[in-house]
Length: 499
Ligand SMILES: C[S@@+](CC[C@H](N)C(=O)[O-])C[C@H]1O[C@@H](n2cnc3c(N)ncnc32)[C@H](O)[C@@H]1O
Image (cartoon, rainbow, N blue to C red):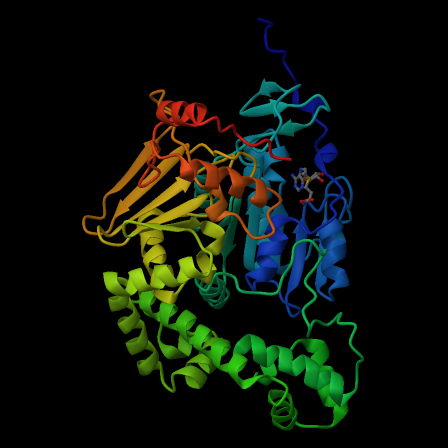
């Protein structure tokens, strides 16, 4: 074995970690889809690297500035902003006190929210790297520290003395502004429903300021307003209009209510009813979960939520009552079973023995009662964003989260960890399946793939074949690796080679 080489901090070339991006980074995407960055917020990208996120934000008409000690050292750009992004910076700094300093400085520039993101353990290629301090020096003489989700949370909380909110794997948001935090939490509870796509560099919704639709004409205004009505399930308020649309309306010399009346005629009434029902469900869920914490008075709700409450419930009291009714339905096994059956009919997950198991990405598509069940579990167990699958034990009132790191690539993903929360006792059990030599597998992966997944057809063929093997019982947790291998070998079924 060779002795680990020593590296000194002066050798580290931090700027070499900056990569050109073809789509916006995950934190910027989450800030936009979570409604934290809008066309009305200002953004500072602190440690912006080559500036691709910055460019995409600017293209979308957002007031964004960037600073980087190597690529954009002009300190004029270091201005207090609504949102500050500290994206993948802490993990390239080899000195802990410098990390703390960067985090504090970035937080200091934020008026509403700071987004902190880092590389997580398991995300990096450690070949050609050597250990250095609490991370690694790569062959390109860059430093990388790989965090665990918990370690990052602890680092942010202890440095800034504020409890951060997990926004995704390796990504935390720290809010200074309570309204902005409530807005974000609400959108999260409703499952980040937004037309944001990560493949295009930045959001371009129908009513986005960069929309290619003809501008200035009533027709194009009506089209954009109709899009907004479809999203909200109600008439928009002046303050909810994107700046460019507001300007076009002002130029058109027509009033918003006249234009809104024209626009609603463009929206199919059935579609509008569906959106309104879905939004009412989302809001009921928000009020249901508020019952666990300090319920904010009406006047402290964000203005757009006050408008939702008036439009969908008539009063705050009625909204709270709907929330309570939803809370009861979360404990109603028959109702949950019915909702799970409906989700199954829509092609989501597996329902076996009153246990409903599904991929976490499908959570926003479930009924408010099922989402409420998961949200309560999340309060007990903490952040679920890294889980692959969730299992709702409808009868025994438990929630299990399953972690399968090779889910995207393997026909038989390995379950490495399972966390189980018991709603009756509030007990949380963590089972590490990588210990004790007993391999746990996830069977019937096709039930959890999206219809456009490149492996779906091959996986389905394989799953159908193993379902035909009479000696194989795939119910519950399924067989152990040995029995499974034996059964498929006897039945001459081989694992598919996924392209
Ligand atoms: C991995 S890149 C990330 C760039 C960009 N945020 C992104 O996500 O594409 C890390 C960047 O952090 C910058 N950096 C290094 N030390 C820093 C510090 N103390 N404060 C701010 N940025 C720093 C580097 O110059 C480099 O451009």
